[in-house]
Amino acid sequence: MDKIYLKDVEIFANHGVFKEEKVLGQKFVFDIELSLDLSKAGRYGDLQESVHYGELCL
Image (cartoon, rainbow, N blue to C red):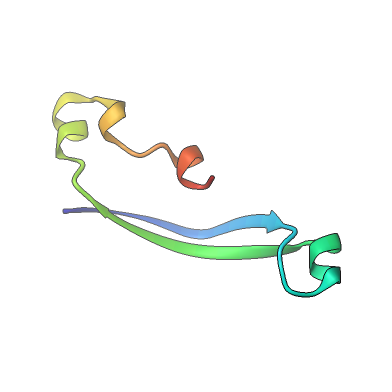
């Protein structure tokens, strides 16, 4: 199993319980660890078998 680490991913969002959080928004910071099999991507150079970071953060 392969691992990809994303550290200090910053996302700004209007989310929360209080009205001010929904209006003003706030920054969220994440550390993400992915465990997946990237052997086909590495063996064949096929990006379809890898991870698209843009789609991961959606």
